[in-house]
Amino acid sequence: MTTIQLKQGAPGARILGLGGYRPRRRVTNDELAQTMDTSDEWIQARVGIAERRWASDDETLVEMAVAAGGKALAASGLDPDQVDLVIVASASLRAPIPGIGPQVAHRLGIPRPGAFDLNAGCAGFCYALGVASDAIRAGSARYALVVGAERLTDVTDLTDRSTAVIFADGAGAAVVGPADEPAIGPVVWGSDGDQHTAIEIAAGSSTMTMAGQAVYRWATTKLTDTLVEAMESAGVGPADIDVFAPHQANLRIVESMTKRLGFGEDTVVARDIVQSGNTSAASVPLALTALLESGEAKSGDLALVLGYGAGLTFAGQVLRLP
Image (cartoon, rainbow, N blue to C red; front, top):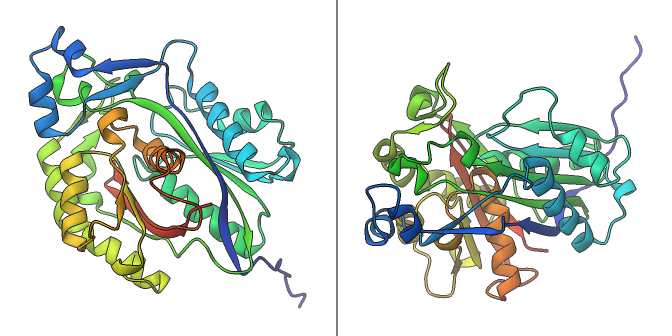
């Protein structure tokens, strides 16, 4: 019987470059207070957001994904024709077919890559990063472009203060390539499907609903173990982590996780939600990009990341910043 042969992949994978795109329009809490029963004080006390970005008509999902992906490619130093896998994570596509992965690849000049979309809610980027890392180690791909892109304003009732004050738009991307020494740790992922209705767009509806308190309790009580497991799987501990960048869902959740993990003042903690709101699958790469651009984080830092959201899904990894 003939034996099926397998490709030999790289010993590890690493992020070669990051890039982000934030829509032009800034929407402050005071602006929202003009159209709904809310205030800057109320919003900041509950979710920690001061402003968020909302996309204009020309800032489509594809346009934002291409902009972020182009910046990540430039930062990586690769030519587009070196990329052979493109994954776009998004939970806000308005049309299921065709996916935008092939469109993004084409717009960036990437010839005939494997290309697809992935929907794991706000955990999408971390899921996609895990898939890309494993594909490179297995030999299924050499270089991958991973994008998280969202236009949550397309699926949000902008008159409902329970969601409109939280959700926003944007895109973040990473180019992933082979490494002799692993710089992306094992992905620790999972789901709690018994709570799948906590965040949903119900059949026949065009807007998202969220059981905010249920999600808050779940995130603050269940996901610390995932973060600990991600560190243990990578062979590191809290003292080794330079940067903590969880999904930017709620500043109170970020602070709770930081405290529960015992991170001290030396650990840089992403608080991008204050200026960007909750950008779902785009939030982790946007937060990492912002920390590198500001100088708060630096190349070579060890980062702990976590995505979590609709499903309910979650995924955490340890990675070294490019």
